[in-house]
Image (cartoon, rainbow, N blue to C red; front, side, top):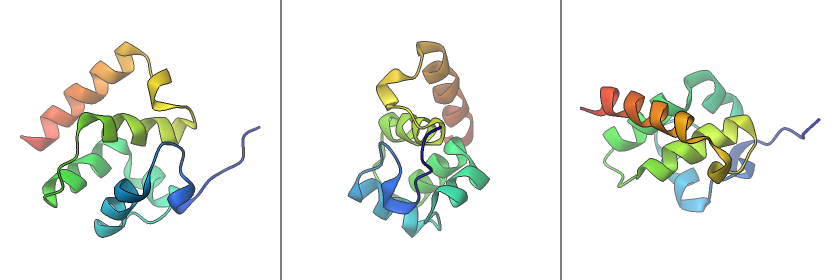
Length: 88
């Protein structure tokens, strides 16, 4: 069983991304779990940060506790479509 991470210890989430997340009210793994990766990405974008889809993938992978590069192409496509729907 993998160890739970919190705050800046989220897998895939570096210091700049963590700063963006904190700025929109996401300060822990529990916060991210409650809001979900797509909504967290939407909030970061809406706050004016220059986040790419890589942040979205990193957020989802952090929830799954895997490297973002391990997300399947299908998962990435679903995330991209969901993000497009909420950021337009």
